[in-house]
Length: 394
Image (cartoon, rainbow, N blue to C red; front, side, top):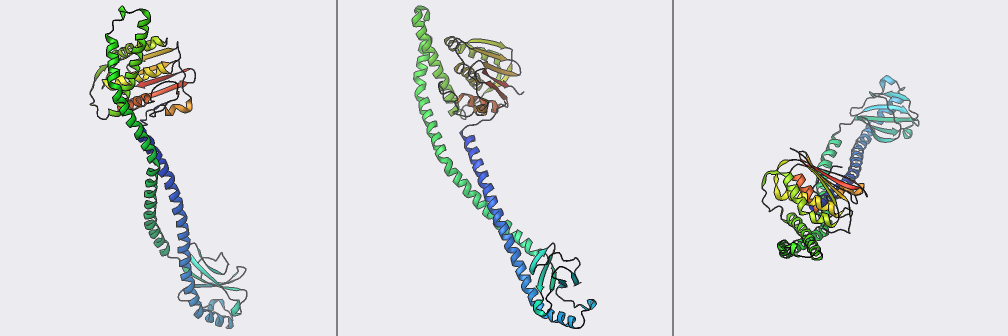
């Protein structure tokens, strides 16, 4: 599984906002489509009503001519033409009697309707002594009403859609505000906690390092080692919190570094942790030069090693591989279920509440990996262990 996203609270907030706006936008589009359909039907009916009125008025002067034609023998060639409309005479069962239409009529229902590019108006002639006949008027549909309808719909529909979308964005931000406030409260708590931790942790680490353990008995050395491990654990968490809160303000100094030396240095730093948990650590380190900020590289290595320790079993193994293409850290720990892998780089994500930490270590790794254009891959199986590999993209 390849994971390279920097999924902090801004990402989560934006993702939630985008999902809500997308859903709201689809609903607004469907509403507008329904309104557009209704408006289309209304415009069509209005157009047909206008033509019906005109045709009915025209029929008042044309029908007497048809009656005179019938009384004169109903010669097809003498069927009267109308100046305004094309005309035809059909039986009620659809048989053409006489017609000036270019295309035969297909629908035989009294009233007015639009068919293809023509408008037809059918009048029953029963009241004029022609019980089985329909008189039909035909005119061309010029489409002006349709163009006007589309222009109006696009103009007012766009304005309405923008208004609905703006309302949706405002509502979504209102809904997200409690989450943002909760996270802000947590961040402020972390800032205050970090500030208070700095002095006592530094004091503990400094004083432990000054103790000459060769003068102590074994029990006392064990106690001192435990104090040292705990102090370093707190110091590592402090470094993560400081980086997370202040990384935008920290000056970046990229320089060519020998990664092998730094990995060896960090392995030595965590040695007491390895001993305390009885972990067997193996390393296969080759020379690797990389231009990167030392502090950021240290945070990546420390978090990979820290996780390999925390989530490992007592007496387990840790394998570290370094070459010109990658840094790989594997453990024999609890592993992670496949459905949770995509969230392991989310800020504050913790999949085992029994271990310490704030769930920010791998989030920091992901952010640094993304910043330098590297690639990180995670392979994990429950109760088998986890392997995290960072590939350098040169």
